Image 1 (tube, helix red, strand yellow):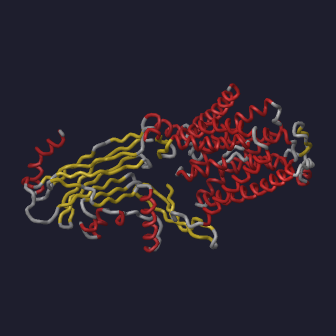
Image 2: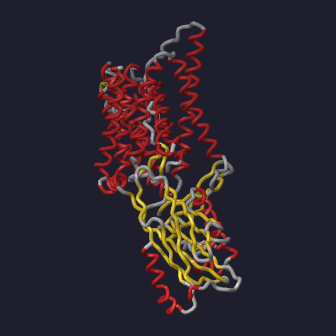
Image 3: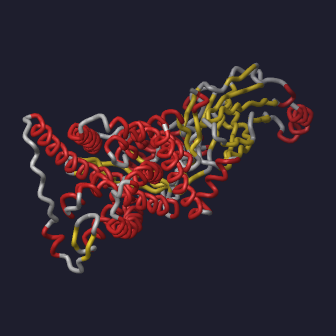
Length: 307
Length: 256
């Protein structure tokens, strides 16, 4: 295996190229199968492998960009992207990622960045994973008993309805204020920088349950937003933390774009209810592992950083 | 070899000046270490000769020992200590800043360093992980400073950046010595020093230093330089690569 070792010029350490490609491939498989970016898996996995957390978060963003590109093209071809809604989300997301970069540096200086990242991960993944699991269980039970699932009434949240300056989003089938998606995009942009995630796992439920968008354009529009906001996140990291390791990013991309295609083909053979349940279980496992890491006495009490 | 020969020829002259003290003629296997894509660390061989006055080995029974220290460039660092918050989660609490901690420190000796000299001499020459002069920037109580120093040494030891290898120096016939020191891939680039000490009877009789330059070369150097100085172009290339890879994979998948 000695020949598979490759030096990462920004992370300043050498890794086994095959392990990183396989890691990217595994996460790519999951992302292709479930239509998520996979950032929530790749960043913690890279940190466990020994990549410095900042480099991991900065380089994972490129992996998510790559994973979302082919998805966006596929959805554009079948009219599954609301460009107006996507544009508003992206605008919010870009401002959010710049704000996220500022929060990142603030937390870094106080020394609490790792703890904050871990807590946000646990809260977000824990709550979204549980909601998804409950919903998927219900759907599977309904499917088993033969009762046709009642179509959920599509409605946006009353708070969204209260916002001023309404406008029409034709493809989403909505007449709402653009402030709602703008704020949503802003929040997801902050998370993209902090956690190195695309935010699809927050954006998709929010689009469905808060905005009340038509299901057909939800995934495509979410991927559209992910593509632009992760690209912005890469730029923010490249110019502020300077922690984007291009060699690491390419290794991850090689694995993940291939894995994503395999995952997407595999997904078409499985019932979507089971897919959602499987994703919910993965999300909950990741959340549980990070929560344990917070509470367990760490291996090493001390940490060192350059000052 | 030429250098050795020259040293051997010059030896009588040197001895005339230094009277009865022995002289060290050290060398290292590599003066320049270049980090390339396949860099997984380097194995340094430090070797040399001990030249005794008059070319005669001392006839008493006291042993002669050699200590070799390789140090990386010093860094200003911040060490944080985790503590349990509210009995629930571990968060960073206390911290201590050091103005000049060595980024890398390896010490090899012919016998355990504690047997060679007393603590005071060890502290003067900074020999051994327990005797590093870390120069904390804040005035913390000595007990806390000790705790942090031990934590730092333990942490750096885990990634093989601080290494103590007693008995790793081999001395042949009392005049030739050699030691191997492993430099891990995680070291920062910069000027490293390899110091050799000749110790007899608890005293340092001779010392000599050689410098080693570790730098990134070729593609690795270019990438690190671009990330630092052309960060906007670097970021754009990273984004372009991601889009290209994703698009290419989708294109290929549609055809097969």
